[in-house]
Length: 279
Image (tube, rainbow, N blue to C red; front, side, top):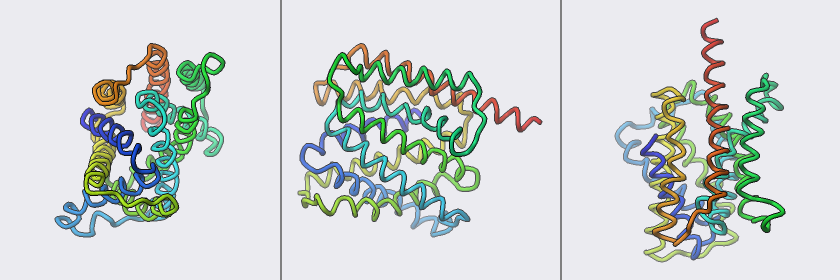
C-alpha cells in the first residue's frame, strides 16, 4: 500500500506536468494505453488465463464509471494545486456510504453518518466557499469522487471472485478505447518527449492500481488504509519541489478531517462484515 501511494503521487505529478502541453482527455487515453502496455509482459508469461471471469458485465460497468471519473480527475489536476485535488479525492468513500444507503438499501447507522458528515465538513474547509472563489477544479474533483464511489462499489464486488491482476487488466483493456472517444475531439499528436511523460503516467498509474488492490486482498483494511494518506504527503513534497506549490494550512486540516471520516467508515464497515461472518 505504501508503494502504491508513491506511484499514485508520481502519476498525479506527471499528469499535472504534461497537461500543460497535452489536453487532459488525451492524457487519460495515453495513461490507459501505456498502462495496458505495462501489463503485456504478465499476459505473455501467464497467457489469457488471468482474464477468465464470470463477471464481464461488472468489468464493463467498472470501466465506464472509472473512465468518467478519471477524465474529470485529470482535468482537475490540470487546473488546481495537486495536493488540494488529492485531498478532496478522499471524499470518495463518503460518497460510497451515501450511495450504498440509497442504491443498495444498506443500513447505515448513526456513527457512519456522523463520520460522513465530518468528512464533508473537511471538504468545505478546503474549498471554503464564501471566503475564496470556488475553484472549478475542486468541483470537478468532488464530481470525480462521486463517480469513483460507484466504481468502488463495483470493485468491492469483483474482488470477491477476481484477482487483482484480472481487475486491473480489464480496467486498462476496456478504458483504453473508451477514453479514446473523449480524446479524439481534442487530439494533438505528442512528440517523443511528451510520449515519454505519458508513458510514465500510464506505467505508474497501473502499478499503483495493482498494488492497491493487492494490498487490500493480502491485509486487513485497518492495516493498509491509514497508509493511503501518504499520497498527500508525497504529493506535497513533489508539488513543492516540482511546481513550487506550497500547501496551505486549511488544505492540511481539511485533508486530515476528510481522511479521518473516510478511515472510520472503512473500519466500521470491516467490523460489521466480521460481525456478520461471526454470526
